[in-house]
Amino acid sequence: MTNYLNPSKHQAQLSSQPYQRDEIQPGIVHIGVGAFHRAHQAVYLDRLLAEPEGKQWGLIGVNIRPQDSASFTRFMQQKGEYVLKTMDPKGGTEYQHIRSIMHQIDGAQVPQEVDKAIADASIQIVSSTVTEGGYYLDENQVLLEDHPAIQADIEGGRNTLYAFLYAGLKKRSETSKAKITLLCCDNLRHNGKHLQTGLMQFLAAKQDQALAQWIKDNVTFPCAMVDRITPKPSQIHVKDVQERFGMNDQMTVMGEDFIQWVIEDNFAGERPPLEKVDVQMVDKVDPYEEAKIRILNAGHTCVTYQAALKGLTYFDEAMRDAELKQYFTDFANQDAIPAIGDSIVDLPNYFSIIAARFSNANIGDTVERICTDGYAKYPIFVYPSLAGIYKLNRVPHKTLQGIAGWFVFFQKAAAGQIEMPYHEPNLDAMKAFTNDEAGIKAFTHDRFLWGNLPEDYPNFPEHLAQAIREMQATYA
Ligand code: CS2
Image: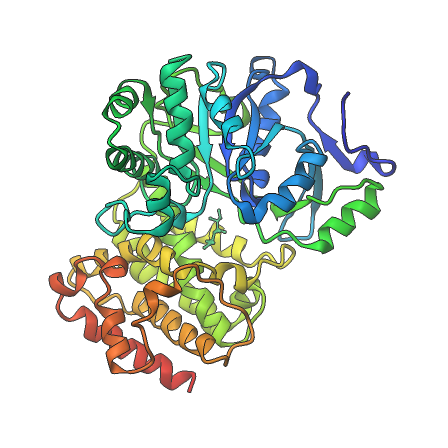
């Protein structure tokens, strides 16, 4: 069998890598098969599978969220195949038939199947995209053991990534005993270390010293920088693909044309020859990671709530709004770039590329998507520029403005004054941030968000409160 999804028309417009599924084997288990994984990692692996040296690097896609089981069932019915549509800023559109996720396991239904896959010696890598909030670490990198999901998993539940890694690695350490690489693909600073520190604390809480020692001896956690703007999948593109190609694909994903993956070359077992498909294998990912998180992700985060306050729907509209465009430029030039300091990345050039990507009107990336999960994003994306500029003895005015935009936005969202829904999994942690002096004080002193800044720079809370008051006056 070659293709599960057969196009019945316009085949020439649909590219497909020249390999047969029955000649490839799985080498990677990936946890979190959302749109981003399908538009990014699965695409690189799809290309690699067409290379003579690439045949053992098929993917096993794993879902761990019960709420995603229904769509994952559909994905399984399609045997993990789908169409990726990419759109460049000039309107150029490409369609690729992606087939690299050769097996699929719904871990929310059959967790033991995931354990078996992770224990299998032919699997060399377990990678993950479970969002920034999916690692449950506080501002000091301490595991949130009191979080209900983590608590339940310490007692044997299956809610978080850690529970699945724990069970799978335990089985591997007792059976095949083969070395393995855990490759975090989420937007976190030092993401490999982040995963490692979370997992080791989880093992300590489970009091499993034997497994902890086995992991120290046999597992590596390379850092990686991943990048492709991938809007929330939309029925518009599903329909386009169905009509254009006459194929029954319900799982079409769409992304920008830009793609980048930079990986620290630190693999425990075999590693895929990803350099053959333009992945950058480097000694240190830090400069790439810092540039991306502090300019692209933080730029998104600092602009998006102000865009929502202006009533904008699509992020590219923000780049056509004179004030917000200037704001993003100033944020990068006055705060993000100086806070990074010297870098092997050409930061002004990197900024221009991002500004052009943000302006891509064809992808229809929504302000609503980028507003999602603010509480988890600020400490990762925005905190470094804040702290970096204070360290340079300056006031990070533009960053403070981007935080104030969020505060005013979530007050208005809570009061029902904003039409766009706010998807915030951490509303509980934000309860004290009421729309008054006490709420502003709680917000400006929140440790999870701002770490030690209020003590290290005693003017910071007042600077932020002032920025909030200005934002409130603008959007009164
Ligand atoms: C965005 C990212 O959700 C966000 O905050 O900044 O999803 C961004 O689009 C990707 O990291 C791009 O690689």
